[in-house]
Picture 1: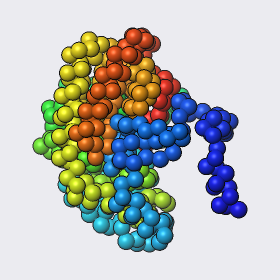
Picture 2: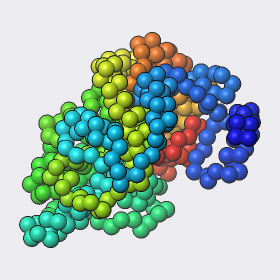
Picture 3: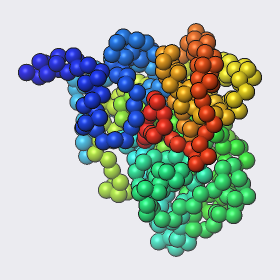
Length: 438
């Protein structure tokens, strides 16, 4: 009977699938009428067999591409052994994965979660409990406040949402966690003015992905590091989108001279399976004691084995070098296009996280790209975001640039200036709508 149901499900038409989604799913996404069935390498295939060159990668998730043979082999092997073992017991893969993440990050200890949002929640809790312990011991004043940046995005859960700046995400769910204040992006003077002895952590995305691919400056990072060190507070780096190789470095913050105290990662970690992690120095990690924090599903054997394989693939296949090389080619090609099309205000980013800031709305460009077999998306109504897999080849970049040039020429005819009412994020405005998720 089970096999018969599976066979029947495969025969569902795209129209039926879309109709059932409209009837039974909560209305949190706007999706185009395309049903993707499988992928290979840098390409996704729809139910009609049409190929799409994917420069979105599941919003920075599918870094090793689709159906990487080594990833598939590990997933099949572990699915036949044990997909889940309670965190009340050891499993074979948590420790080696934690060691690898510690080595990659330059930090000491790891906690595994299901998602980026959950990793952020853990980081906030860790910063708070460290501050509480210091205050209880009489070695520091009470610290409960968080400083985050304007234009930030850290997730959809209540704590992560509280340090997310965009009003449209926050306001429907108010009141949120108290004690959060936002600092103007890269404004050292504003950071100085808002930091005091009550701050337990400063939370920074080294590259604001959802915010439009904006890069934190060396000066701002170093000042945040100095303030948090001087006041025994935590510097938290949210690397959920920018980390694990996306910039051509293991972590985006590694271009700076100083390390953070706590780092959050997720998206590409398990190559498409749900896994996040919080990495911290011994100093902060020691504030957690048994029973203080936990996760039922975080760090199961299947996802940890898959994540360990992904990080090993990045090393074995020298993907960081490929990210740097392909990113440079892509950036050079985009800069040439920017010189041709005057509605492109700026191209920014590092490696394979790039933003194309338009003087017109981005939705028609996303729609035209989809029509031409390219997957991209748009954030803040007018910033096209590119997040291709780490495995893209020189010919993939050339193909993208050729097709994207045609997209720019065609879509510009129907594009309008962004609404003065303010940015409309992906969830509500884009033809290829993918809600920002953690």
